[in-house]
Length: 358
Ligand SMILES: Nc1nc2c(c(=O)[nH]1)N[C@H]1C(S)=C(S)[C@@H](COP(=O)(O)O)O[C@H]1N2
Ligand SMILES: [Mo]
Image (tube, rainbow, N blue to C red; front, top):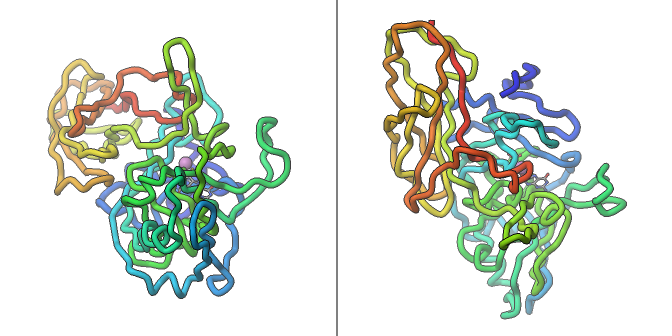
């Protein structure tokens, strides 16, 4: 990994100012819930200024009863609180060789929060979704022009879709994060939380929900946040959906020095989607041999699991390469090599962390 430009903002790495992209230095990981001050921020456009008294959420499209609801009414609906891990689909991009375009995230474009809000299914039921409905498009209030010849000319809004089946199961429309009002940078007044999916689906500053009977082919669904899916010798663009199984090392961090012949705690987090982390293994010799790490606390669906390993460091000083790998309840694990069909996203192959024993 390249050295981070150490420009920090409130303890987070500034990956870009405009649009605002902040990363958590992953070595700061020390609890299951990520505090708001540490949580990564990913924006594509300026953060929209929304007054809660002037905001409406519209539900429309292939429904019997389109409607709009305001903030006050939304708070009166049945609510739920769930922990969920959000990971940017470009997390770990800084490790790719050769370099690819996009925000150069290291390990910290990921975090876990408690999200409180209204299950999307409650609003869908109220609108009475027609049987021909296939997808639910979530649209944010943020907008801007893109410097990309493949983007539509003029202003564009950030929008993504999810299948109706997913929308009915566990998608939450959250107005609280870790028990506080959703902060502006995380989507005030309302954002979607799509558990288990890469976070581009968790639309912030939500203002419109459109039910469609067609697959959505918006810019962020096809031109961006997609990968090449192989069908024999053919490749078609598929939208990114579920997070891939992964373990990351928080400490010791890249480039750090640890004492020889002593006990060092190696720790980090591991996550997957639609399954549980059942094992994390750690290699201290660049992947030649593996030992099992301890999983901390209970597994929670679609939230990361913290892990730790007591490492008895060698007595001989020198460079060491740490690698972690996760295995989930569906037997999935991390590939050793990068699959180029994934373009600039879905980076979950094994990543070496170089440190020094001294
Ligand atoms: N409206 C809107 N929603 C959005 C985005 C955005 O730019 N606009 N970025 C997405 C992406 S790519 C990510 S990784 C997450 C980041 O959420 P966070 O900033 O709360 O960490 O929000 C998603 N939702
Ligand atoms: Mo993202």
